[in-house]
Length: 398
Picture 1: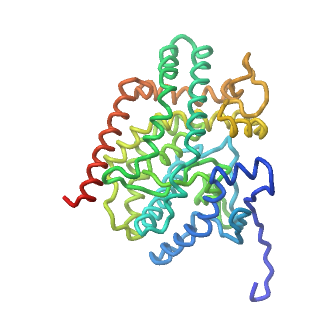
Picture 2: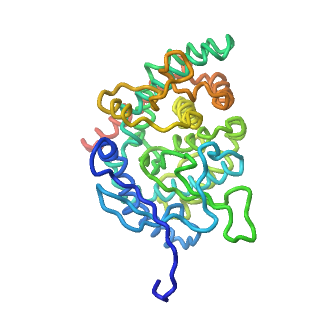
Picture 3: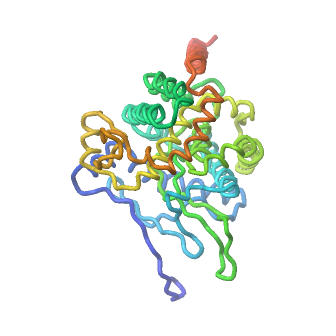
């Protein structure tokens, strides 16, 4: 340091392999470019917003040390009191959920202000992940889990399993509707983080060794591969549905949205000087309702991965990338079922215990019901018609 003091700084890097499939995956999927752009363009502008607002609180992001587009991003990991969470402890309790949603609201508000100013490049952040392959995988997860529910959960779940099967062909269309709402009339767009896994974040449990808290008091985001521009509903779902503590999360879901996330979002929008039309609570609830299929399948996917707990087979992943043929068993390891086709995580007792409250929720809310699917698709068609009419009117000048 300039005063002669020496400090140990621990760097961490996101690096692109010099060759091979891992390089192809990072570059062609766009996930590396996203991280590079967030660290080099978005984060500095968020820091400027905080400075202008007199916000001297702990930032939500790590400090960039060095970066080279197409090659590496090096950032400094936080020091005392900070740690990452294991996959098994992803935002597991009510205080943690509240902290996560307040932090997410702050991130969303700053992103909304930067979008309003035209300071986030829209083309690079139009998709959370490559849409076609991601939707195929989501369809495979739903299809395979429907078989598991039908074959192992008992007769009382047979009807729901059948509805899940009937929904599989509609997943791609509905997910495209959910992730293509930025051009809807009066859409409120934010810069979504896109994921909420414990190992992608840092949690602070105290600033002194004299006292440590049982629950984290601050969060930092580390990786930004899934950042994208859209309405905030899917990000809110990610927080609530990505924890194995599903019964707690679902019990308090409405209260967390109405009394934690939404007031925090409105407060931060005002703090950072947002000048557009703010999201109403009613519209947020409508968007959450319309994207519940995504929430439920996301829960299946993330919690399955927690209990799979084996490394990804990159040879199998490369085959998927080249052919477009997907499997929920991405490890190359034979599962505990007969065919070996389905992820072994779906047969884990912890997965079953976590998913039953989610499936009860889906059944009660008719998430897989045909009428609900029709309502979402029909509503999207009406919105697209209104948007096309508005654009045409603006172009013609009426």
